[in-house]
Image 1 (spheres, one colour):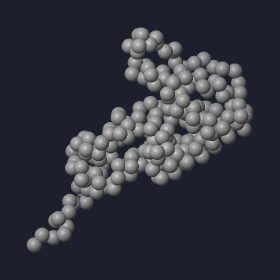
Image 2: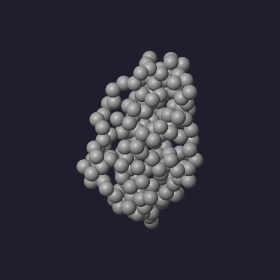
Image 3: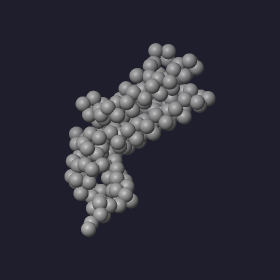
Length: 210
């Protein structure tokens, strides 16, 4: 007689499959965005397509698991920076971290920018992100480090704006966004502008863009 335990994969296999799935999904979403298929993710992970759905009932649930962890890490970074002595430097470091994530993860850009893709759990993560950004912004305002009319929502929107500004040349100048972050941050400072931290972009012709 076959026992019920023999009919199911050992728990260690289930844990291993979940880890493989999450790693493969994170890589696929980062490279191709949320339109990547479950079949491709399963193939990358070396597991059956049905195994994916045993762990996550829908593709949206899988996206939420990947994006939720990323947002939680970003929120944790913001909370740590909220205790920094230099509020302006803390805000700039947070913006740098956020744009670095956007620059290397296509799915995060899509999830943050398109409400139709926002799973309730992801929406909650974005709300927590907005709260910590407002805290960082408020500290910088109170310290007189940034303009008094700058809000946390401004900062959240500027993260995507800086990334999108540099995106057309990302293949040839992947760090170009740092120049525009410097330019943007100087625009919100209460003090005179600082030297830009990245050289100017190359000409479109040099980048092969016509």
